[in-house]
Image 1: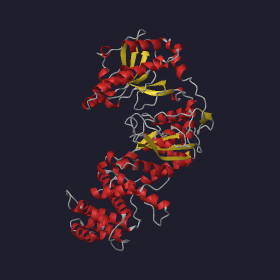
Image 2 (image 1 turned 90 degrees about the vertical axis):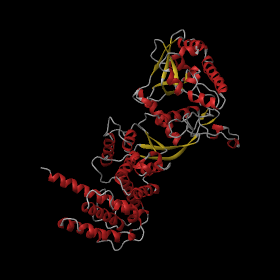
Image 3 (image 1 turned 180 degrees about the vertical axis):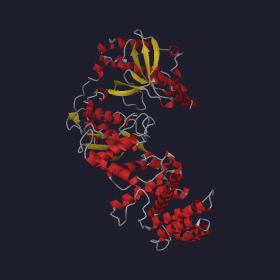
Image 4 (image 1 turned 45 degrees about the vertical axis):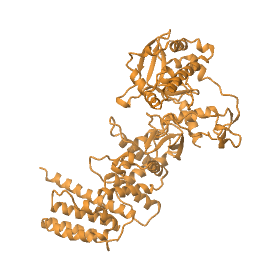
Length: 589
């Protein structure tokens, strides 16, 4: 189903009304090329054009349509008229050169560069005579014949080329396109026909030439930079039925090109149909042009600096679609596909695969935002992105500390309407206890986990509101509210304290209430005595209301109970802040 859906997406994008959005035809691929060698008809190097835009390490090269690349292995294999600097110029990669020098293998590496240059040239010389007669091809061959290190000296791009080993290609003087885009070259590559059929393709169901090795999939976070594979067989054990490599999962050449081109397009760095959460690279596509293809990523991601309201607008559009039952582009019953990928050595593992109608998917996404909605400060974002949600429960709020599988499991729970992974609640509660501080993101994670558990398990418990719920009688929630109230009394009784009862007692109060609340209530009596009579009466009344439904203090609170405690504490603290802000506004002249 996955490969068939990707194949269908490729076919759809082939006929996109906007030519700029069409995917490459068979035999071609879209490639980022940072530097272009501009040459004269006699092969003389005129310039090294830098196509990159952006700043610093985030510079991105211009993308060009080029002949499809070969699958790179440990051997030497060149692409036609484009490749990295080692192949095109014989320029050593600075890091590889240093590494080989330390290993005493510098001479071997330099000899390999000579072989790479020769293989790159041979790839051109085996083209049909009619293609080699092209002015651009003749200029490239002349350049390769004349090339010596001194030719490159003095060009500003050379240090970057030596440091990064970038992809290079050629442009003939006076041309707008690359040499590999000249009509003669395109005709020789894109127009190539498949070999004779030798099997039945699993995607098309028709006889086809079965592809032995599939092109690499690039863009999956954590996978090899050269790319990795979804379909791959390279152990002797896979030959036991007389099937070698790709024949174990027979896919025709055209189908392989289609699914790999489509997936590489979806995973591209500038794609608006992918999102990275933890180690899971997730891509989205529909069976027809649809509003959701971009809206999903906009809703889950952090908005760009030049459009800070992008996610708010995307989420608002999703709610509108759910309420009205229609989308601005695409139908409610359009099938929508979600694919989660994760690295696995030289291969790519399928983390999850979900197919649903556009309307059902929109409902699940808006349900997620309902679940994580909690009251928060004005300066905090209206909707938490997945990144902010997950870093909020990670140690030191760092992305590096997000457990490897958590991001993918959270996305899967959202898109499939399943319970959130238990790890999410566990981490949120653990960080609250370790830092004595329930935060916006942690409260959101706790509320979402509890509410989804209540809803999907049909538990006999009231779902938690985004804000303080005085009518919620759950004991752990009430104890969290009580702890926040006792802290507030202490703060008002002794302004300017460096530490409050939260710093000393939060961990014990949230896990073993019976051990500390008797002591805290005695301290409260001392603190209340420092308040004005009216304020003292007000706070005593609030304490009484909170305790009215608490029969006794539990000896221990389980994980979910500690989550309820943290949420009650957070809600009550936010309620105090809201009242303080309202009072300050009223006191202003």
